Structures are given as C-alpha cells and as structure tokens.
Length: 153
Length: 153
DNA sequence: TATAGAATTGACGTAAACGTAAAAGGCGCA
DNA sequence: TGCGCCTTTTACGTTTACGTCAATTCTATA
Image 1 (cartoon, rainbow over the protein chains, first blue to last red):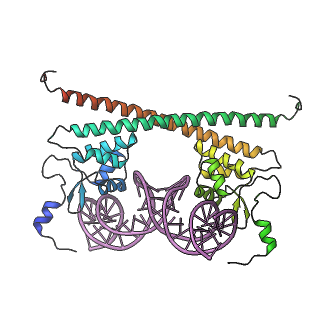
Image 2 (tube, rainbow over the protein chains, first blue to last red; image 1 turned 30 degrees about the vertical axis):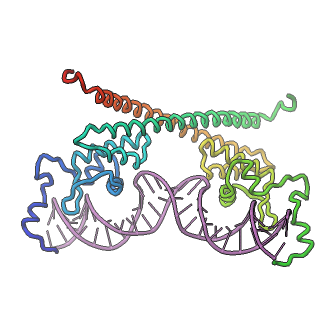
C-alpha cells in the first residue's frame, strides 16, 4: 500500500545476504540457534549488548553479533549480570591488545568466583540444616506411627 | 489533644506486661532481638505469618510470635519462600498430632533439598567454567607481558 | 490478492522481599 | 508545652531479566 521505488525494492527484498558471504540471519533464526527468545535478543540490544544491522527495520545479525551473544550467554551462565558483561565487552578494541579488557575480566572473575564459593558454602549450610531437621521430622513421624511401647526413657 | 477516659489511660499506659508474665515486646525490641527490620515484621504480618496482639494500635509480640518468627527465619535460611513457610505453619494445630504438618514439611523439605542440590551442581559448573576461562585469560596476559622471544610454536 | 507467518515498537506485568518516604498519633521527660 | 523518639498506615520504589499483550507493518506464498 506504500509506493517504494523499484531500486529500493530490488535492493532490500528477498535474498538477505547479498553483499558478501556475510551470513546474516534474522531474529527468529538467531533466537532458535542460541535457544533464547526474540524478546531476549531485543532486550540485549536495548541494553547495548548487541547491535545488529538493519535492513529497513528488520534486524540482521552478523557473526560479530553471534560472537557477542555467545559471550553474553557464557557470562550469564557463570553468574555475571548483564551490566558486568556489557562493561567487559565495552572495553573491546579490535585494534588494540585489549589488556585492559582482560584485566577487568580477570578482576570481575575473581570477585564472581568468590561470590560463587560463598554461595556454595551457604547452600552447603542450608543442605546440612535441612537434612538435620528432616531426620528430626522423620523421627517424630516414626514415633507417632508406633504409639505402643512408650512411657519410659 | 484527644480526650481519653482515665480508666483507659490507666489500663493501656506504661507497663506493657501487666496481665501476666507474658513477656510482651513491641516491634522495635522484637526487631532488634531477631535482627530484622520493622518493615520486615510488618511485612510478615501482612502476609499472615505473624499475628501480634494489639494494645490500641501498637503491636505486642508474644512468645508465640517469637517461636513463629524463629521458624520463619529458619525457613528462609534454608531457602523456603514465605509462601512455603506459611503453608506449613498454617497446618499447625495445637490440639492435634500435626502429622499432616510434619508430612507436608517433609515433602517440601525433600523438594527443597533437591533444588539445593541442583543449585549446588549449577554453581559447581559455573565455578569450573569460570576457573577455566580465568586461566585462559591469565595465559593471554602472561604472553602479552613477555612479547620477546615469540614467533615460533 | 488474500492470508498466514515474521517482525516491529511500545508499554505494562511479574516475581520476592522488603526499602523508603510521608503524614500523623502517642509517650515520657524537662 | 515543646522536643524527640517510637509507632502507625498507606503506598510507591527497587532490582533483574525478561514475559506478554497490542496494534501495526512486511513479506512470502498459494
């Protein structure tokens, strides 16, 4: 219902990867490929973690975006917040040695490792506490189901 | 600025525990005693987990409330939600054997234990993954700081 | 060309456990 | 009588990572 010049139409329609073997994918394929939802990809973009190209309004993800997404997912897996991930990725400079980025990543990793170990300890505590009260409860239930032979000791 | 009968005033003022050795405490003391905030106590009450008496509008916590609060805190410590805690406490019947309550508690505990163990496994994974990438990063930084004698393998 | 299937932006909703004012009432004490 | 402290209720704010519509537009295909 909108008139578009033939040139534009020809350039944008159909064949998605026309410029090079750039291997561009749209959001649906991207989501499927990495097991995330469309919402997630848009959210990451909104937070400045991804920057897909656009064909008109359609997002086109390059292999650069794929690499970044992999990093994001790894980061999330080990418990980094998206802020942390962004902060680390923002330091990436394709022309430099990225020493600063690596140092930051190492620094954050050490802290996160400490957090994880603390969490582990907390969970262990909880497990122990819970196991303890569970056997107490089992005790009570057992005594209750055998009301005979009680009274002493 | 509001007229209150002398009787009421005499009955409500000053000495808080006048009825018996009931050992009633107000919210401030209660909070201090258990290391929680006022907001938390009111929140728990709002959620039906606590039911302090009232002296006018002032909350007065009995030892029953203290026992319940201890349970709540224990529950939170081992990872139960307030909903879970409430569900279990709601089954408490001071006249019965509470078998149902114990069974429910045991059931929930088993599930929670499973969750905790799963979490522990996840954290272990994360720790391993993180340690791995940390040593990789350390590698890169080490190579970078010794740029001499490079080129071959 | 009609229609189903993607994709877009925008915006409110969710979960959990409180935090944080705001405005006001009641208490003892000097 | 004024001050300061404790307490009350009400209600919106916080955090994180999205979920879930809704209204539209685009695109491919039959």
